[in-house]
Amino acid sequence: MKAKIAIVGRVNAGKSTLLNALTGQDVAIVSPQRGTTTDPVRRAYELLDYGAVTFIDTAGIDDNSELGKQRMQKTARAVEESDLVLFVASKSGLDSFENNYINALEQPFIVVYAPYDVEQLLTQIRETLMSEVLMPPPFYGEKLASGDTVLLVCPIDSEAPAGRLILPQVQAIRAALDIHATAVVVQVDEVEAAIERCKPRLVVTDSQAFAEVKPLVSTGVALTSFSILLAHQKALPNVYEQGLKAVDSLKRGDRVLIIEHCSHGVSCEDIGRVKIPNLLSARLGFEVSFDIIAGRDPLPADLTAYSFAVQCGGCMVERTPIVRRIVKCQRAGLPITNYGMLLKQLL
Ligand SMILES: Nc1nc2c(ncn2[C@@H]2O[C@H](COP(=O)(O)OP(=O)(O)O)[C@@H](O)[C@H]2O)c(=O)[nH]1
Ligand SMILES: [Mg+2]
Image 1 (cartoon, helix red, strand yellow):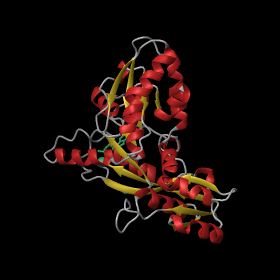
Image 2 (image 1 turned 120 degrees about the vertical axis):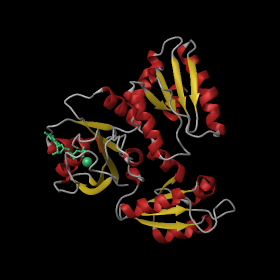
Image 3 (image 1 turned 180 degrees about the vertical axis):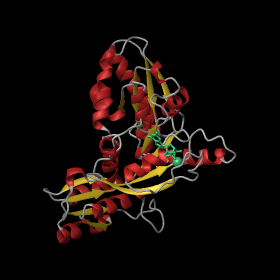
């Protein structure tokens, strides 16, 4: 997915100037006139050693002109869809309005002070985009390379939607195309013949059919499921590993924040509300308290009240909401891990 980078800041901070400097083109109108940039201006750019990105130049966040309200809504939408924010400081230090604005951001940001070095800034942008937080790992990891064949087992049963594939199946096909591998798509009945004919390096099955498919896959051919591949996409192993270290410095009465991404995960409810609290107090030998947020609940305003956060595997959501919560916790200095990693440590 093409990374989007919003350029935001006060009116006349030099946002359009920055866009022009970064892309080396006069794409955005620069002027001392307040409110020169009205609608967000998008500019595709090939970031060296990374790939295509889209810069989005926006109207000021403090545009109080007549049209300002509408512009600020458009800016907010541009920010919402962005992976990274370049915040252009209006002076050599941020004022409290600017500080509040960046603290409320849910994505990583880079504060840009004039004068800046364009090359250094591009390097900083590239490094941020390539950090674990913003860079989903390759869909197939090490399991598949260019020229390989992957066999995708997609049962068309009563649960399958009419006339189309489900998202993980589509993603798996797309990811194979991206790396110039060959994807072959079959139902369970065709697995044996397809393996014989196509000699896949990897078989990916719907998890419901795992038991049925397993005996059909000969040794030497790797077998996994769509849900396992998707779970890997959403995991941030280094962030979680780091967060996990906080378990052993928890003190009596500390508060732990449990973050669930869906509001109806029956088995997750068990893990977050029963299993983890029990295992954690057994491990620590004393009680800590738990607050749980679920679904679209916002994170608590004061994250510094917590000593440890654990989020679910996010099986029902995309990577972005997971990442955004991680970024906010990290910014508040709150160690964060996920259910899987914590259970592994506690069991
Ligand atoms: N002195 C100085 N002026 C700047 C700088 N960047 C932009 N400007 C000027 O500030 C005015 C507003 O710049 P512009 O990029 O349109 O601001 P925007 O409203 O944030 O897009 C223009 O007259 C620019 O020439 C800078 O780094 N230093
Ligand atoms: Mg502008």
